[in-house]
Image (tube, rainbow, N blue to C red):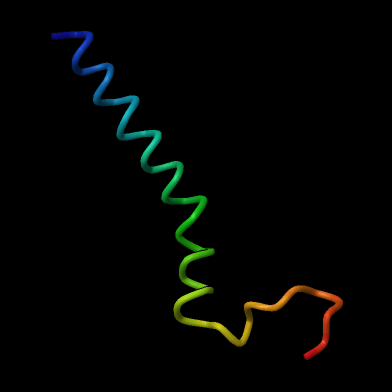
Amino acid sequence: IQIASMCMCINISATVVLGCLFTPKVYLVLFQPEKNIRPGHPN
């Protein structure tokens, strides 16, 4: 049961890390498209 709980803990922590990395990008793309421009490219 220790191995199963360790695997669950690692999976949950990896999911949280990926969520923290990609949630701001998805938020910008979906809800603030006017800020979704590359710097140095005026439109």
